[in-house]
Image (cartoon, rainbow, N blue to C red):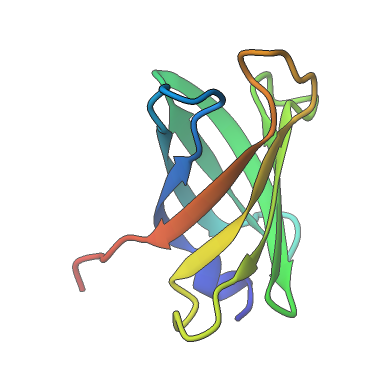
Amino acid sequence: MDHQHLQGQWRAELQAPAPGDKPTTATLQLGPHPELAQSVRGTVVRGGTTAQVSGDVDGGDLTLEESINGTNISATWTGQVVDGSCGKEIRGTWNNAHPTPTTPSAPFVLRKQAAWQ
């Protein structure tokens, strides 16, 4: 899997921070990074908030940096492509750059969404 396989729309499910809470969902839209040839850039929409994301995949390892203000990293997504998923599922951990009891780190599952051809 390479950066081109990351391009498109992904649905993320982040585990609930506390028992009894509902999982959080997010939508990521990724495209080619205009300045870094082997990377992606796009947006993540979660809970009515849109943030910028950029990153890459190397040897099946995903790294995305999320920024709410477009300058500072507010969170990171690190994960691995699931074997046998044909690059359509990634599991890992979303890490808040400034964790709090209500927004700690959370395991996530990213699933590639089908697109019209």
